Amino acid sequence: MAKRVTESSGNVFLDLGFPPHEAEVMLLRAKLAEALRVWMEREKLTQAETAKRLGITQPRVSEIVRGKVELLSLDYLVGLCAKAGIPVGVRLAA
Image (cartoon, rainbow, N blue to C red; front, top):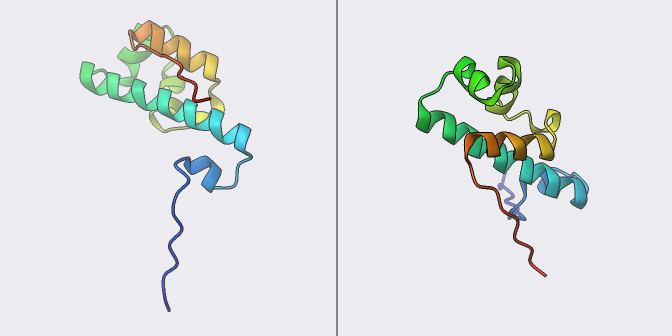
């Protein structure tokens, strides 16, 4: 049986069937969560230490680490990135 390969759109959430507007928000959330995970690794922080530095609970840090972006708002993630000193910007392609 031949394998069928479909080229990605560049947005895994769109490829999974989310509506375009929702897929874009989910992708942004995933990118911010990944930036926070990278920051945690770079700073060599445990989840408990991360929670203390960001002023949130450890279970919320766990959601970020596990990529549970559907549980985290875009505003919330932007705020956490700001607390961590991670610059966040927006670039629009028109």
